[in-house]
Image 1: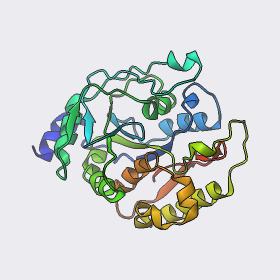
Image 2: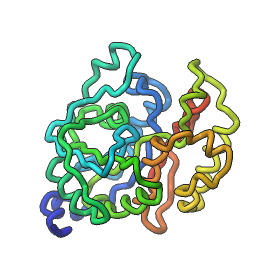
Image 3: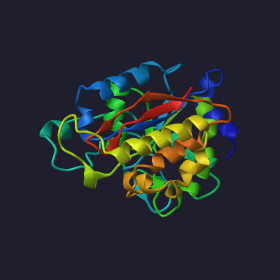
Length: 273
């Protein structure tokens, strides 16, 4: 299948501006129903885009697989993939339609591996707790691409670059995870003071992003003790690697939110400007 086939689906967007690519630090699932500075910032992010997306592709920290999967469900379910939270959070639904045809076209764009079609997954909380604030009407088709957790960061960086054509077709691509994500060090109080190492690594990543030093961020294991404490497992870090792989040469990074919640969770968000 050729890129011309993709135009058949998204042809009405041929004259539209290139969509930015985003990284969202989604944090606590409770953000899905909270009104706080972060969730208000999410609302602004949706309003500030140059146009309404024709579809949204999410690479979430909460869909880890063997092999790369793409969600082809026509009406993806809202997955409450967490435990021990208030009943009000489990009652939330985000009934956005899927994008099965576009998902299958996305599969064809990826030539580095065989992508598996999946109609059993849905929208996990890395997707819906964010999109509920950005696009509360749930009227934009949403699909997800999984993270092959058996592959190194460089693999994900290169795979992401194969998706760049979608940006020119009205598709908003969003990585959803956290740059600093150490649940063992979480402080369960409001206004918890961030750990020094969390502040330091979050700032290191900010500087690397501003410098365009993406290779350093892909090779995060070389960034010392702060990186080790901030990324005890890389499930929440890898969505950012996808975002970096989608950035075009000479594009700038704009930070759309900065905060460290609960001492050890960076909520930093950014997009291409």
